[in-house]
Length: 284
Image 1 (cartoon, helix red, strand yellow):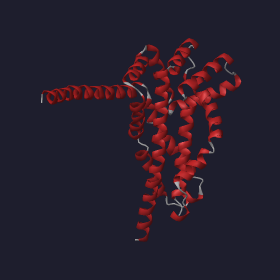
Image 2: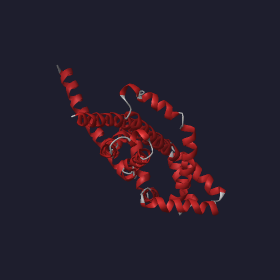
Image 3: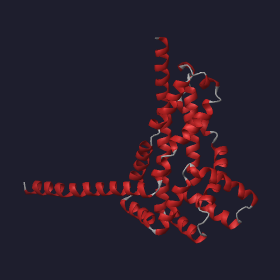
Image 4: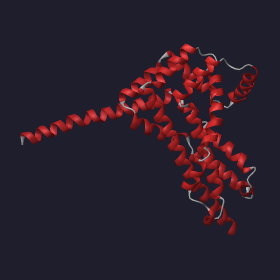
């Protein structure tokens, strides 16, 4: 009896500690997401996919044959399927699984440091739509006045450390997959290939996309950090290359990829529902 009471006492003592640890980790995860700049950057993704869809909808014969009001419904559904909160949930899920409380504290220590805050602010500022034209102009100036080899070398190392090109490639490929699914969803059901087959076809374009994305990413990094010293960049690379930094960036990229892939499949189902509803209304 005494042993059983002791066992119960241990359970009651351990449970609050476990709950407190879980609560603490959740608070750290939310803090990390807010301070990392991910929130401000992820909110742009639905717009990126909408722009891609607009371009295809204006040129693809199958989509051009669909009534404009239906195309409008499909376009509007992007904001729901690829809602920032869905992407946030996937990224935090990966961080929750792959980062320990100690990892989270180390990442937050970097983000809370003066240099960490500086980089986050620069990244947030450069990710706004208003800066896109300015970045294009910057790219043109690079053709006339290329950066020094030393600057290109350190920017290349930063790209590898923070997985900037890898992230851009995942966004580009999954946007392409989403648009492909949108086109396929407009076909008769018996002509539609499986989504997994479409993903395999899109995967074959990875080498070309990686080449294009790396060039664009290097220009973006040169622009974003144009006023940052090489000493500061080295410190950023040092953090990003540390075991904690690697785990953090791996988790973020993995979560983003997962969210976009799930979103692409979900969008295909949503489009099918929209088209079915539109057809039924026409028949009535």
